[in-house]
Image 1 (cartoon, rainbow, N blue to C red):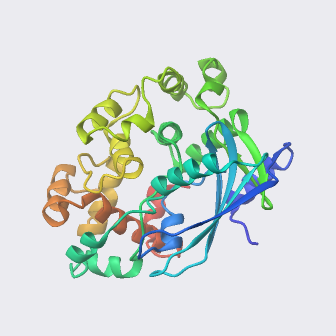
Image 2 (cartoon, rainbow, N blue to C red):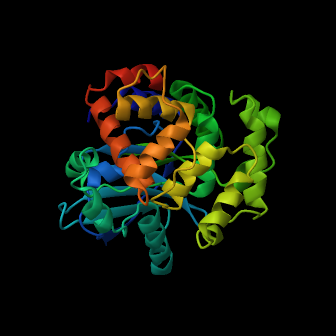
Length: 342
């Protein structure tokens, strides 16, 4: 297996640590709704690399903590676009009962959008001059979120006001300090900590991991989840307006992060109320060919995208965005290099 430079770094960091061995395996077959594009769903080249997963064509290894138990997951593509099937290997330190496994599978189906029906989206935009060719290339792709809401927020915090390189370093430091190193199926990957793990950690302790001002935000958000002031499972059943208000009330979380959460975590396919300066530069180049350093005003971009893709703005943007980053991954769209700075 050939590893990327980032994966080699994580492997070298992990080799000297004692991993938690996950030797008990449960196997389940998953059948997403059709069509389903495995690789475009299970790998997002725009996501900054974290040491909790590895992807190879047709396979994704992912750690997950569910009901307090650290797990290693291996998703393997066994189907086709029109007849999808995923073989899921679940690795743990102990045998898992069927009730636990059923709850876990329901959570995975939700996070990975395995039951999403995009028929109306395809019907409406497959002949669109701009979006149609993108849909043709990536038909069956879903947006996904592999993390809990709390974990997603931790990722959002380290992405704030930092280059991708620095974000990777901060997240690696946090996971190595407070997470668990798991070994399963020949992989060594980090697993996110539970909020309670760092509930009593001081800001000074966190600052030693070179997270800077974010230490205060990590502490405050962790307290919010430990005290159950925010509960992801309950929030999923609230109306969009309530979800948005609760998220905006979180300490240190701005409208850009809230937009990502509403689309990726809560699966609102029309979410678009804010465009960050970074996205503004990319959208201006992508849709209008403008110099990224002289971008179109964000409000004008929102109007433009609403006129074209209203009702499906988030999923339409997701298709454009992933198409662009797959091109970048394959050596095209080199103009993104100056904006990514990995």
